[in-house]
Length: 466
Image 1 (cartoon, rainbow, N blue to C red):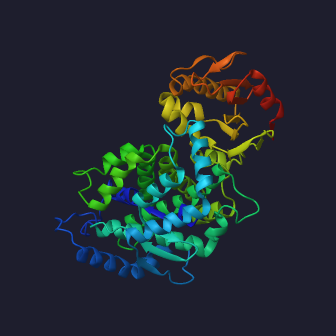
Image 2: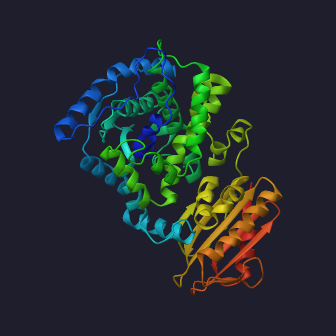
Image 3: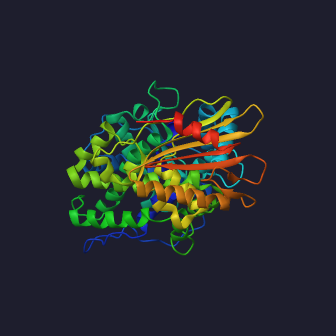
């Protein structure tokens, strides 16, 4: 889906004003805030027209900074929120029809990634519409400005982000880099798709931060010392939760722009399984790109598009990517019934899982990830069964994950009882079967909704891990 990459998140763009580098002596401060006048549709239109008018001046500066030439101009226009919502709705409906959305939504709930039943298509539409300040559509080859905050620096930052996506598209073909579902015979798994979004959004975010910093340099370049400072800032931002970002952009901290405030307030209604991968692809993606840049300049960043990371473990830990630490391919045995979802969660979604149920173990339990495969199947009697098979770097990593997963069950199923690692298993207490968990060296298996341990044994025996 074209909108899965190319969005400029308003809250992320606003972060460029949080800790600006010092202005050169005698230069104007582009972060200076003027008293806000009452907003009107006429003022918003004037701001939007002016922002798009400045794009022609931004493009050559950005091309010089990113060391990629624009092969042609990038069309741009203002799009109303209503039109953007219609566009997002159609894109999501095409990729995720109602029956598929219902199946995947139930699967996410069954796997413990949603706290309550919800519709995934609705959640994604809500996330895109409320968080995007602008977007670049690689199908139309056009940049659309959707929100118009009353701040020229943020508007130009958004433009720099989207124009970087335009450069990516002209040089690396974003539609091939992150194909829509069904458009490529070699379909990417969910985690690999997320990893590629880290590259595209990370490059655009890193470049937009550098562009903003270059605005205060006499020759438009960014010294190494300033880059190092920006990377330190990115580390700070990447460590923030969505709640931390909301607090940083709260009224009084970053002004009271209504577009920014609406975006921040909407974060509270977006589940972590949707919101966290979206935000992390920007900040942690920028750290991946910064690591590549420090190793080999823009040529090394370009190589991320030619030889993209294969997992979020590689994007969250760039050393894994540079060391060629490839994920294991995990293949589950067939199981009769209607399949709701067949996914690879990856390290990032396991982080989300543990943040919901055992937050004190969030990172220790998910780090050291080496591969996984999950599916949810509905049996003939209507009971869903979730099967999980994972691979880890070390025995200690596998043990940490297994213990944290077992501990999470008591939080998820408050009426449950028993030991999932025993032959008796953990009874969910809701009439939907039992949960069994087994660690076998660096591999951990779990089955949720089973009748007996025999079903776990079949999972262990039939799973292939390469």
